[in-house]
Length: 75
Image (cartoon, rainbow, N blue to C red; front, side, top):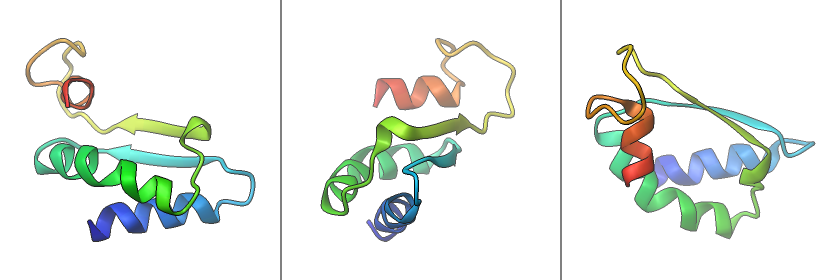
């Protein structure tokens, strides 16, 4: 929850609402998909203006089981 709050607070502090976030896989997927939505709501961040970059060392399509982007879509 602390990481999610930190991300949301940094995003809310962005002057023009634009915010870039690199997302890795593993245990971070569950943590962020569970805790980031309520953290965003609590500090009025604007996720529609965010740029999400999936940090995926595997060269696989999103539907592949090893894909970081796919892991976030499923969660």
